[in-house]
Amino acid sequence: MSKMVLAIDFGPYTGRAMIGSLSNGKMDIEEVLRFNNTPVMVKETLYWDAIRLFHHIKRCLIAAKKYDVKSVSIDTWGMDFALLDPDGIILGNPVHFRDKRTVGMVDFTTKTEISADRLYEITGCDPLEMNTLFQLEALLLNHGSHIEITSELLFMSDFFTYLLSGEDRTEPSIASTSQLFDVRTRQWSREIIDAIELDRPALPGIVPSGTSAGMITPDITKELGLAPIEVIRGCGHDTQNAIAAVPAQEKDFLFISSGTWNVMGTELDAPLINEKTKAIGLSNEIGFGGSVDLIKNLAGLWLIQECRRQWAKNGEDYSFDDLEKMCGGSSAFKCFIDPASTEFFEMGNIPQRICEYCEFTGQPVPETHGEMLRCIYESLALKYRHVKDQIEECTGRKFSKIYVVGGGAKDETLMKCIANACNCELVCGPVEATAYGNAAIQYITAGDIPDLAAARKIIADSIVQTVYEPMFTKQWDEAYERFVKLCDD
Image 1: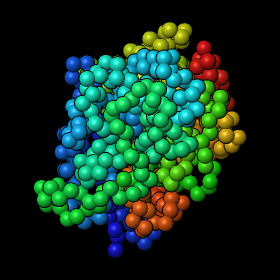
Image 2: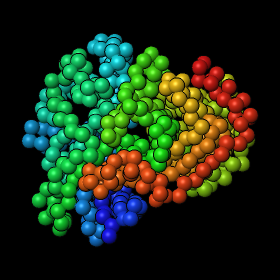
Image 3: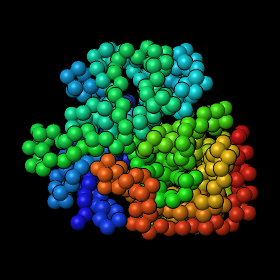
Image 4: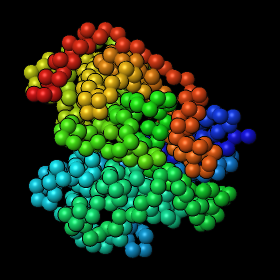
């Protein structure tokens, strides 16, 4: 008889409820509900619609009733947070990481309060404006009165867990995205907190990933007519759930968690912090079981999605199949962008910004939608090759294979480009990696799976993987030389 659990995952534009079932050494995942997670702009500030999203969590629990789930776990992306007053009531809607409030905060913090070198030495984390530290700096500078009435900060996955169970804690996977976390001691950095004079809000206590947060509160079970369900504080950071689901059997492997954002990296036993990793912008984040993931946060399919949204605003509504056909019919290697450039971080008219970037860098400007799409796909793939080379240099490892997990693994065009650019085998799947990892950690917490290695073997035995072999490597090598020169300039 299978045991079932509920995994609730929040992506940048959608959320979904997935039922995990474990039976006879195989794991299965089934989607039972999907809902929008669209950020809301109010008076030039971009917010999470947090209370509406909690309503959707309740809908997920109702949809899962017929499956008799034993536990539930919630994950979101990192960095963002909710603020609570002394009575545990939320103080306004949490702000989205793509909001502009943090512009300039990295320079301000590293020039006036704590050096960039020291910040990286403590956290092992690339200082990005979206990180929690710089969001808090923006609040302290511009909304001090708001901070004064705040009692506690909870990261978004912890906030939703708190609303379900009443327990206000966090765990290392999402804490390590904040730039307030000492990656060696696995605790909050007193030095950073004192440097920015953060008297309020209090940061939550840290417990291991994969611990019980208690049962869903009686008022919610009564409201929804639920049987008792345990709330598991697994990996609150969605990326770490996806990495937990990488079906690798070898110890040393390279992975890409591919979706709206892409994360490329490898697992280590301890943090790797030196001048090379700092210059490259590699981050050390904590994975399930205490492993360290040396990663690079990269642009992903968000660039394609934003183009599609912009064209739809202009009355051109294309399916993803349409986009693939347009891309396939265009010429290769006409122009490139550096997907990591700040020009491509904010929402809004990505096609125009790509054209402006190409013109500014002296390249041909994309003239058709197909050329625009090919520019994005090729640039993404070449960027991943660049990061692969850098990770190999820093770790002394060589990788002949890349594991790709997440929704981006379905994009055949991107997968072929990555295999060709990186000149190595791509092993793709599971597509629903975040849900598989979320469910697996619940099973490990309950004792149904002994450890992460066993979970990865179960996942590998439960899915069909797609393999891509490299082709046209000479042409891609030539394109790579042009791309690296563009990025270095």
